[in-house]
Length: 232
Image (cartoon, rainbow, N blue to C red; front, side, top):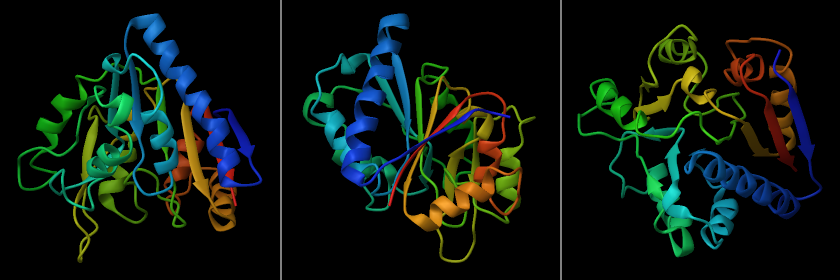
């Protein structure tokens, strides 16, 4: 089983102050070793302070490529778009000239757009230097939501696809997610979240593959170590 290292902090500021230089060092290492670095970014509000700190840091940003781990199938300037969040918090200030590869493509849904988005992902330097993932209280990470056939397809390690459409139905907008196989084509993975409920879910997911907790597939693979960063 993959090695899981757990870093737990007294508060969120302390977590950010520790994670920030760690991420920066890995990006610098990528630039030093292959003249390019890549990082996959989680959405949501949790990583916002980390992205803000990175945006104000000196680095050869033109040699860094960013992409989200997953994306809602909305226009990039939509308030629900991870791309908008990333542009508002990270791709500014000193990091304004970093490279960004979005997952939204022209077709009307992510299933039609899969091939086009995959071609975009192929432009990213791989293996990824850093993959930053969040987790929900339902055990989802990226857009691997429990109970969906689409999730099973995206978690299948036999797939050749780098991304997959996810439909939850109802009023929820469709999404594109990188597949698990794509996400773990990485040098390191950071799982970053807050709160006791989520920590309890994480502890359950470590015990073995559980279809009710999709993050368990990440925690029980054998390809790349995972580091947990957690605070209350």
